[in-house]
Length: 280
Length: 299
Image 1 (tube, rainbow over the protein chains, first blue to last red):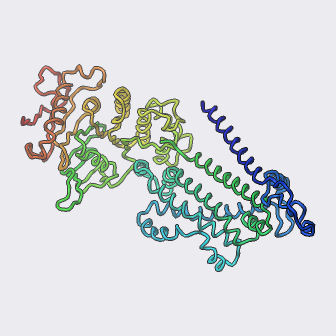
Image 2 (cartoon, rainbow over the protein chains, first blue to last red; image 1 turned 180 degrees about the vertical axis):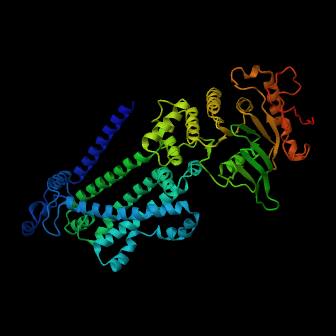
Image 3 (tube, each protein chain N blue to C red; image 1 turned 90 degrees about the vertical axis):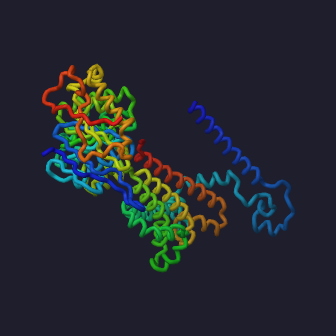
């Protein structure tokens, strides 16, 4: 029953993809009937484009050919404005992970503190409430001015956007550890550090991981915009650069790869989440 | 001097005018190896008393002295079996018990911890389930793990907060039998909350009866004169059984509420009664008991 449902869903998915490709194909078909153009102009821009027969938007087969090209040689480096899509993705992932790890190093211990102490919670709450809704990109000019390095600024922007979900989820998870478990630790005279690592951390781990999963998702969204601003390398910069090159087919490749990497990151954290989840 | 002494214990919550007194003037003592049950309706403060004994809650007045030391916080000397078993769901049965054992004896190596845990897992009849998670166990098995965890630290006193309340009758009976057996084998001092009159008669040496809250007190102490060993299957054939049972039920149904209204005066010290021996010259009295002491019942 479950297997047949899965099979049916897979068939439907493939059908939808084929439908999408068909619509795309039809809407980018060369227009029939050559229009009369100036032969001088035709010499200049090429026969097909000059007649308006070929769409400016790439066809599925153009896109497929480009993808094969990218996959065959993802790591070439022909100077600052022509690097393989693999290099671009790797530098984006590197920035995201660095900013994310730094954020986790701050947010998880601080979240622990907030969750355990109602005093710290109340004291920090107004700051968190004000800082949390600020778009991470709003920090960019300030970061560029103070850090004086575009690469470090991009990492800072990732840091600042990853911090909040982790901080809030950790604090919530720690604060809502079941009273019973804490009482068990109390009656066993468990020392605070051991209690933090053997009772509170495993009890709050699923909530903390949820926060991390939200954070990595947001970080991956933000890095594209951040890299469009700071330039240099990265998949966000690549998209912007290809817009300047008017290479729609490269932009499409970048969009697909952004989606795939985002899915992969989410999948990884989903796996981690499963590892620490417990059934009550 | 008794092993455990509870003197003038009170719990009050500060309120707008006079505040609420849950209970006050609670006095009782326990000897080493004694099994004491406390019975009373919800809201009389039984769990608060237990939590104060455990050191998890602070009383508003009075003192608790155990083994010549004042109870001033949680301690490994007092093991607690919680109402909702309170097992950590991410740990296996063995690890849950090992967590307690490592807290009690931090210097033990892994083998020592493992052997000690296994002994108590065997004792509660969970051999073979060592590596299961609590979610894979039935309610009765979970509560057994809770009991094994409390026994494993070999506390001077065991506190049970209505441990079998959530279990079906059959499971409850089996675990009660096990508790009787383990207590007899280890001569453990036990203080237990229960709502189940039959459970109290099966397990307890003495039963503390609490009047209704607020303003609850210990109204009577019933000496359970049924001879040991008691067997769940034929305990009701003992002529004392229904006399004790009727006395307890009568208290819970009729008398427990009369202390609030003053229809029955709150006793300064709860009188010790032996309803099992009451009027029963035909019952052979188990040796060494004080003469019959029955309070005047007013209805």
